[in-house]
Length: 247
Ligand code: ADE
Image (tube, rainbow, N blue to C red; front, top):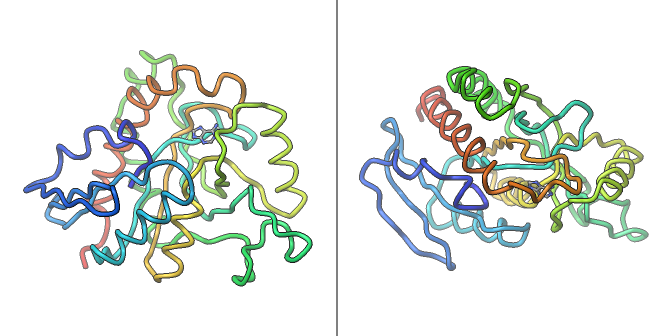
């Protein structure tokens, strides 16, 4: 899954025997990729839309694991545009039921974060390393980017596009004060992680850093997604499917 069409460009062309199924206002593409059954879908933007899409994906399509690829704003030290974050866990940075529950805690779950599946995430990390090595130096240089550093850690999700350095700094400082160190910010992952947790479906996610969640964040967003994030997603997902143990 990805949020936006641009984030998934090129993936649909990989499906053998693609079949289109419409549910809940979403288009699910079912087919085979490297001999495995795969469903591609766009979550749309924000946590509610992502939760709906994930629920349908699990309940109606019976998927055995979920992989999310897309873009995020970098908020961790040294997490720069063009880098990749493979998520260890997700938190909702805009969830606050204090004083009823501690800040960030999801009421009635007794927790603030949902971990990604460790073995699926290990495969994703390996897929990112090998897949992005193949994308090539020429590609990075022509886009004035350094070769991507692949980070691993916490991603924070919320229903805001963060494009203000002071808002990003405050969000990070508040999370740090509660013992959380976010590397990146986006708008869907924590919802997908929570639904996957509810259904017991393994989940892994990677985000390419499109911006630093500052005043430049919206500039060239779509160009970046098309020229960098979607080729990265294509390279990594292709590797991931080949590396993932067959069930
Ligand atoms: N996705 C990509 N960049 C983002 C940002 N700065 N805030 C929220 N979601 C994003």
